[in-house]
Image (cartoon, rainbow, N blue to C red; front, side, top):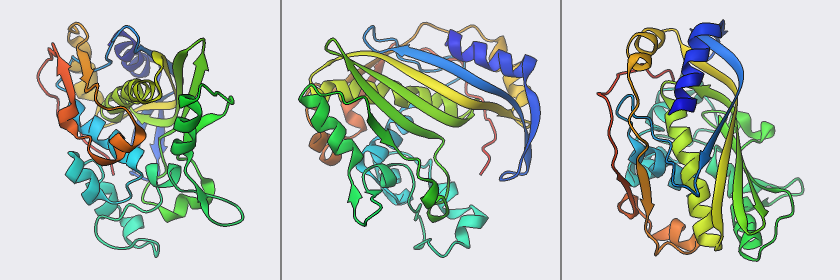
Length: 283
């Protein structure tokens, strides 16, 4: 929480105004932020200065792991996070690649689980990483990435949290996640939860001790219609102690995550929080 609030304060005090073409709004912006979450010590990075809907964040992560490309599949997991971008994004609605209602196109996990090869076909990046890590292999390129410039026009949104690089060091599994753009009041809260949970899950299914999840954000911003509640409400609140995330120990393989795992297999304990803040969402 201290890292998160320090970033929010930095944007409020030092940010520069930038016009965002996609949303038509201004953003108060800073470049480069580095956060870290100690998974080994169980420091679950869930925002406490307002109520955060952690279940939806984990549901979205499960969808990325499964390679989903349809908002209906994400809703079935427990999150409506893709409804707007799949069905209300005017540019995407006119895109010839869109297959119909709820279609997201080639984005996030749909890229990572079926990354196009130059000579045709595709490669399942996540399956290969899990195979390597389970055997104790780290080729210094164990990267689950959703970033494919050649496919940007084939999906409803360029990936924001776009790459997850796993590393083994002396039996401990680490994660370096890179995010090109972060809506700090809304999206970043979810992304923090996802980085932590992804490392915890990968360590569990590959048989390693989880270490630290490092999270780099390149462009961190607060939209102009979010600034007042962030500055005048959220930043005035005192954070509560970090809660704890419990994951079902019966989750042992990638196939488990692909098939039977649901939100019932995750539990957050001792979560104290301040009242919700209704931040505007920009499509």
